[in-house]
Image 1: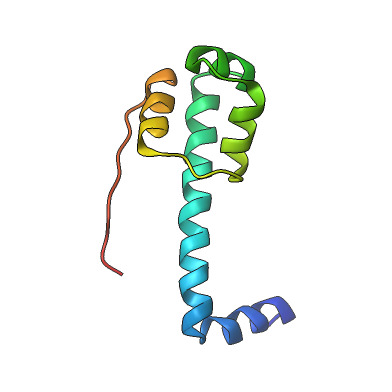
Image 2: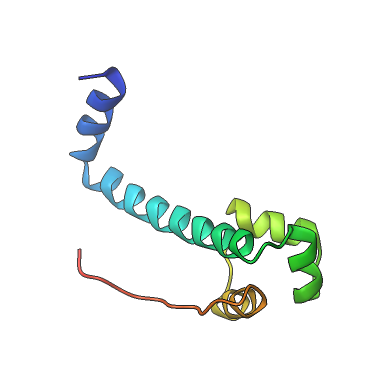
Length: 92
């Protein structure tokens, strides 16, 4: 096993690490979905920003994960990219 895989296995045994890992995984999934929606709509960040009445830098911050979007923002983003917002809570 690689050193990284060993480290991950050792860290995964910690409940604190597991909780942080799940949270980060969910955040990355949201970021990935945002970028995928925009690119599938064939929009640049600047074009999307214009549709949303904001700036390209605001879209970049949203897509980088440096800010946490509200549900309202996610709905507007979905509308602007021709997609539908879907949120689900699943058992662990």
